[in-house]
Length: 100
Figure 1 (cartoon, rainbow, N blue to C red):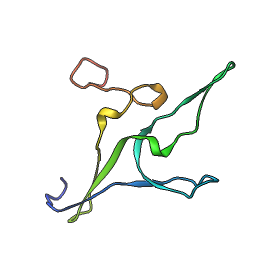
Figure 2 (figure 1 turned 30 degrees about the vertical axis):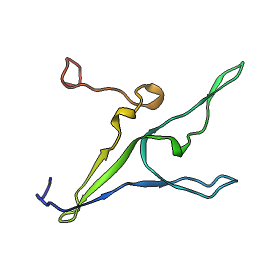
Figure 3 (figure 1 turned 90 degrees about the vertical axis):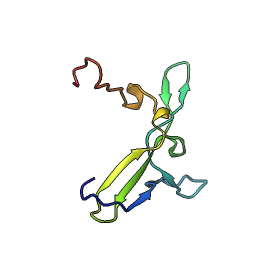
């Protein structure tokens, strides 16, 4: 896009999760959001810790071999949940919205 180069490196960026007491640290594909579960009790609902193995909106990057420009893409955008708990929202530039 920047230099009209036509050779790229495709990579799946990973993040290193902290080690649990029972297992070693893991390198897992990066995602935009993570599934979570809510622990229900009589008193309150508390979100459980995020599980890095439950990533949604998996990311991949393309690096231009000529200039090094990097573009990020999401390989499964249809799986990204929308809502405040995920800190996501739909933005539609084709309709009459304040984002226009």
